[in-house]
Image (cartoon, rainbow, N blue to C red; front, side, top):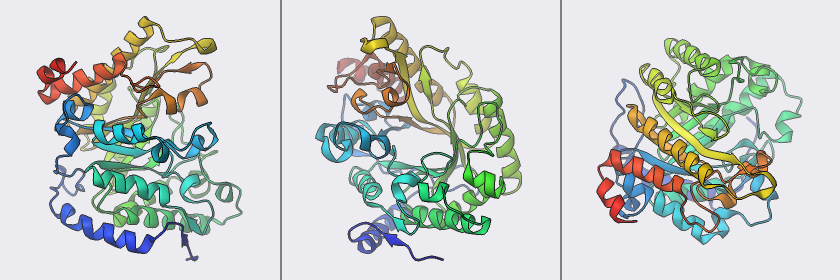
Length: 395
């Protein structure tokens, strides 16, 4: 194995201290309901769930309510400093409003692996330490993907054996670093196209090593952290369609082969220009019926705003309805224990960067005031958590 450099101050000491701090916590976790399933959620109550007037309080113990931590990736090209490190309001609300965090870009390959022999863990470590201080769980995103890979990987002249070793080393190093502290990992991300066809052209791992490498990734992740729940994750799999059908068939095959797949998640990147996925709950339930955990991992609801127009009242009402219905669908499925918003404030949303002429996709305006969508999520959570009366009084 080639020598690796870990780019983070005090990495060895910090990792050892973190491991020691979490041993007792791990011992206190209960096993998940399915036989042989890893423990997926700490029983420790996050302090922010006691703060009235927040999403965390509304959710209670009904579901882990999360947000992506803005930063990394495309944010390096935006005209503002890194949000997680520079925006105190952003950090304060991450701690106050949510019981779960996901790295938006800080745990993706291009951010973690600037060179083949270099791991840059500073930003990912900061998120993990922030979550630990606030007693929040974390979703790891992502280990095997066709996008946001570094140039040295995509353009390198590697043999199949070398590629396999690179991926194994990455999974063992990254998953192992956070073992006992990560609730869920998106092990394989977006491996099918919208027609349910395996991405054999643009996914370097599948193209060069075949579908078996996906099964190996799950096995290596399980060995590196027996506690974390291991997920397939994708977009446009909200309802029952060729793409989600492809995952449904693949998961059954892998489970039959003993591959440690624990969960299936839909990202939930929606737009009000399209109809709502009415069969969202039904789709999640069929995966739950296989014994899997399910999750909504990247929820946002964008709208068309040509020439920088402000959202209309009608658009905001429809957006709020979509947020509410996704939340209700998640809460209706046994084993759907995690609902994550892909950011919560428009300032740092990826949507205007990616979808020209669209935006306003999150639950807060740029000044951090709450949209109708925020209250829609809050109401749905509070109803499930038995705190509807408290929520109504807090407005």
